[in-house]
Length: 153
Image (cartoon, rainbow, N blue to C red):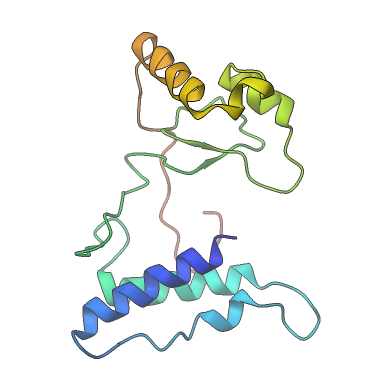
């Protein structure tokens, strides 16, 4: 579900870089769809995205755009995927990714029962109350910069 958003970022960066002419030809989009065997090639898309975004907006940690504000993940973890690390590392946002989400655990961590989350006002009041007692601490473990095709350094 992130592919269309990621592709939109490249399209906008291409428009910015090309002025009135688009300088991105959707070359990465081919990896958003299943291949002839029915497999998604997420790693190929990621490698393409990193290469094209660097060409259009600058290198990792220094990307610039008039439309998007890029956050350097070495300073603030805005997409901490809750997996093996669970909630042990501090993050600005925790991302409960994947199809098999444990809704009970997520709501327990959030501090609300499911029935209460149906009213947006109640959720916002809950968040404001939590913020008054707990400081928001951006950060997390240092993200190491790897050269493709490495996924983990």
